[in-house]
Image (cartoon, rainbow, N blue to C red; front, side, top):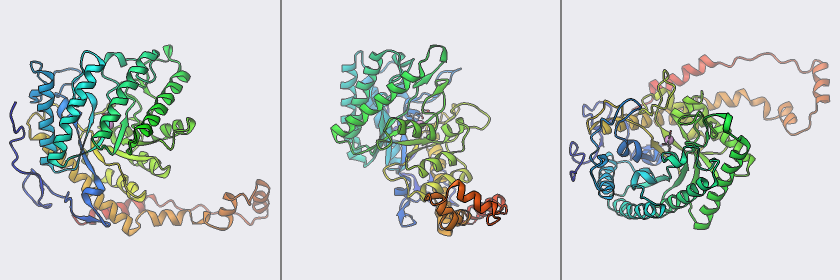
Length: 445
Ligand code: XUL
Ligand code: CO
């Protein structure tokens, strides 16, 4: 396995401006550019994900891997392969010149024959990651445990009918959370990949919800016990691989957290393609999370509107992302969160440099969306129209309704006396759409 895996690029990907002919340069992402008083890099906090980029061979349900990922070939010693993979991953993130990476336990370290062996492997690879992070300055946005690939998790992890599977998952999360803490992770993510059901014929919904809540409570307790200061994040997704996943969308997760008194312990990691699968726009998911104080972080990608599965493509629509980033800025930014590229190359993109092209395009799309969103905030494009639309609730009748001064009796009396007789008002959707487009077209690159 070669020393310098991405030898097609010497040095790092640099900002070269919108007109640059160099495909290995950023056209918009300029990490030191100030946007609304904050560096672009600090707004976006971009991360590369380990799993799709280094741990996935380019296979699909009909075919084997197509990618050139030598460490995934079966003839290698698993720990030697894990080291080679980590060398390539840190080389890539450093060359891309973004600040963060994200991993599942099994992405960075091979599973052993026993839990104890897997734990030693993870500790060994966390040692190596610590060294790589010190050498390159790359940081950890979040860690997580894979509780969905191994056959033991076929019927779920926390929601499994067998409490021994719950116990195994608990042990795995404990270890992955501790590794994340050790590596200075800003967050820890739990995506409930198989926390759902295949059929209701064999499923006790009530029990499974209680098991999941118990699991999340134990994780939050352990976080406090070990003094991990990162944020715990749940990642909603409506289905796939299960027919139905309990963490369906931001609103279901929020309701679940409130029901089990966990709303102060967890926020959400929202993924664009998961929103699409849930029948929502990403804009909707972000707006819901911001307005309810639960936005933690983002998995940036996109789906395909013609396909009903998670295609995890690199984002390329400024129109769509600008509205979501506008909500994020309106809510004060991502804080400890960031934009993790939970993105896959297409199976035919088998050139090593394709991984750069995918990320560069996605990062420039995000950067451009940030500029548009910042201009929209500065110009009050949507916020001032919204404020005007709800102005009636700030005083007089609206305030009286909200603060309890008014009752059905008092309202009926005013309506019956003809003092209240509202005229319908335009929602001005087309005007607002035009104003958003105008900012998109006029924002300076
Ligand atoms: C699956 C997905 C996961 C999580 C981490 O759709 O998005 O990769 O982000 O487990
Ligand atoms: Co994800």
